Length: 103
Image (cartoon, rainbow, N blue to C red; front, side):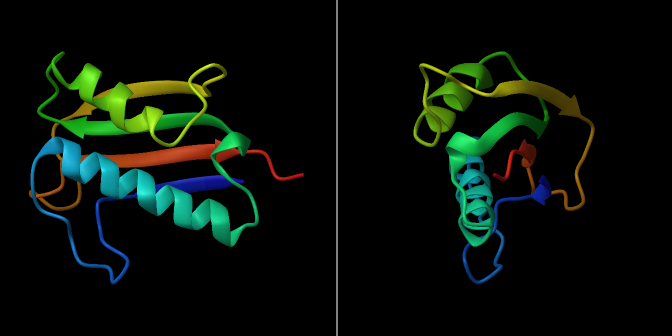
């Protein structure tokens, strides 16, 4: 299953504005909603691609902490972190794509 374009919106579709941590958390929650709708969970994710604007190495510990709330850190999926110039809206700092295995 391919999951793309998960951005920091709330359950009603409103953009979550705030710092990188708040936006990253909201984007992961949206990935979780999609996985749940497909009848699977984060344990089925094989790979994440996380796009961030204004990349700085200080983002990595935040990313690991937030991602760790959703995945099994003992057996994490593969992942890539990609710094980008901009996303679809100048207020959006993060977008997540994922590949998941559906039994």
